[in-house]
Amino acid sequence: FLVGKISYEEFCERDAQVWKGMRVEEFLEIVKMVPFHPGVDELINYLRQKGLKLSMVSSGLSLLSNWVHQRYGFDYSVSNDLLHESGVLTGKVKIQVYYDKKAEWVEKIVKQFRVNPEEVIAIGDSKGDIGMFQMVGFSIAFNSSCKDLDKIASACIQSQNLADIIPMLPI
Image (cartoon, rainbow, N blue to C red; front, side, top):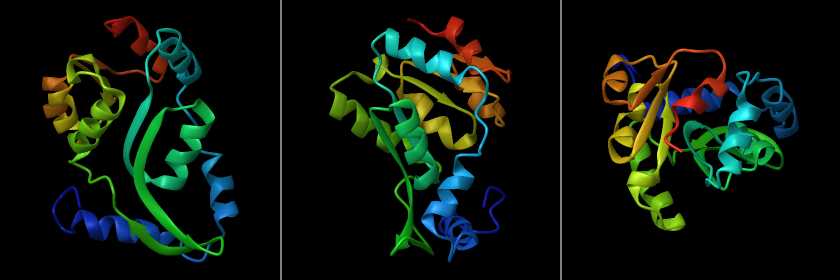
């Protein structure tokens, strides 16, 4: 879809189809094997120590983002729901987060937590994060795949370690 040959909806549907018929438990076992960048614990602990609320807006699949939410104690997260019935994935997806519409969710989060957009720090890595970066007070392009995102980011970091974000933060 990034090159315009299929729609975002079709991309998400194809992604969901890959998992059709798999038991949710099996999928979650696969999810738990996804490696995290080094430094994620250090970054999350630092943000928590500073009293920040942690939110995740992902155009990925809910079973993965829900696991990350629970593992790291996020205050809020939203992603695309990978649908299942009786514990079996249906191959369908309910799109909640459009790739280039993350800013709409950040607006909802800002209202929910009663903060100003200028107080929000966003971390992203792709063209789909541009709208979100444009509305927040500080933005970090982490291992970005998009030069346009890099241009508008408050900071750009190329690293395999998420803890390298810490010295860049305005807190």
